[in-house]
Image (cartoon, rainbow, N blue to C red):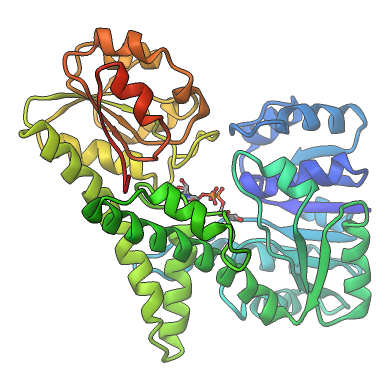
Length: 428
Ligand code: UDX
């Protein structure tokens, strides 16, 4: 099929590239000429394992190209996918400016029937707004479908090609058939609902996962007080299939481009409809507090933070990505700085993004070994696998102190204690 995807951020680029990979002819639309031309040369602006390789294959087969010309792309497509950003506004609601703007542009460009699929995470009711905006400018027949995306950064390609489910919020059988064609080679259960339900499924899923994380973080905080081990607790709980093992890793709280924003947005949606979603408010509060709990652990173990040298390993909001949006690691660096610590940092992928937001007093190391030289403490702040494999005895020798505060419960206590470290984790 001929598909246009508007927006080439994480979701747009992964979706467009994967659709080209499975044989569709895809045009990716982007506002910035320079970004489009780089993508046309196969250069991707994000760190996403496997993406560059499948983009190269799709380009070789002539299945994908990028442009700034939205009108021409829309006119030559049967399917138009909206995958633009919906950042948080100050009040927690989703900012739909880009979605609205794109809807108007699609309406102005359309000349024949097309299915408009919304993949951006939007408040319930937005697909109808998109439909109304398109209709203002295009008198012909078209359909709007809501098809929320569930991919995770770091495993986005695999998540797209092997999803657990594909949600299709559609009220026209012609559009439903077209969307089923788009995903014809992709396994996973297809759930067909009305538009509002599809939009709600996305928010409910992310809010539930965030709730699991805040719940296990609360349990971790109690474990710290009673001498229990949260990892064992999570294992024991998760073996009950009604609970499941996933998303029960305690740590510094969730971050990233989705959970914080979507949880806030769902809370606001409920509020504007006159409903007080108490549970979500607590989920947000627990998540915000978790970084301070880590900070308290550092303070307690170093006695005084002022003047101490501390290495923060990991800056991305989780391992395997360069994304620092709402990263607890970045917050921790700032909290430690305002408490008077001198900070050195290392992240395998997120250093360029971190440089753009952190202040000039932070020292950027070329690797973990360099970051810890003469430090009093090391904080693990993203779950990168490579931190597990470091030669910790070498790190121990080059440090001034011996404290590790593991904000992600990534490392092995007994190995580190044998090497002479004081190991402090979250709830164990
Ligand atoms: C998430 C959803 O998983 C995905 O379905 C949706 O489409 C977008 O949002 P992503 O933001 O890429 O994906 O990251 P995810 O792996 O879900 O992790 C989110 C945050 O939660 C990270 O900060 C991670 O460190 C944290 N987390 C995750 C925990 O603290 N504990 C866990 O058990 C799992």
